[in-house]
Image 1: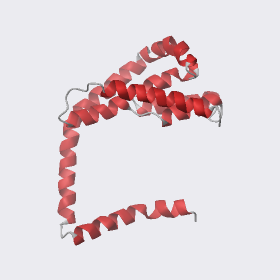
Image 2: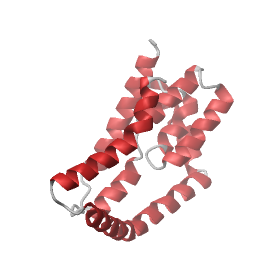
Image 3: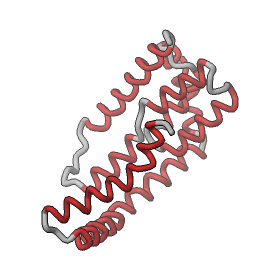
Image 4: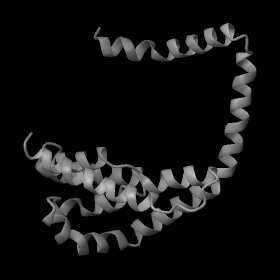
Length: 174
């Protein structure tokens, strides 16, 4: 049995026992703390749900309407100039909005070009070096006192783009 398999087999029980031991040492009631956390999680879900529903609907409308394809085709020449294959423009556009939609595109890219092709590997780099920025911002800013996003979204988008470009550049040498 490899070390990774052993770690993954025992990690949850170890975390559980660690929490129980810490609650005993600190003389806290672990069960009540768990219940309090569960109650606050339900309140969090109720508070976040409208924001999540709105962004999920917007993502589906964006993708199903074909707007993402039109924009991807429009920006493809610019993406090609910075080293991002034209076939990956739509993935670059969808990923900041939805991980599941981007995963669907990634699977389609793998089926079309293969996971070991340059396009397949580049798609993996894009998927792995980016985040669902708008989803994360929706969750975070809906629960924080910060109501002005200011430069957070543009900086996150620019950072994601630069990370993808650098990742694909480095991929050429691997």
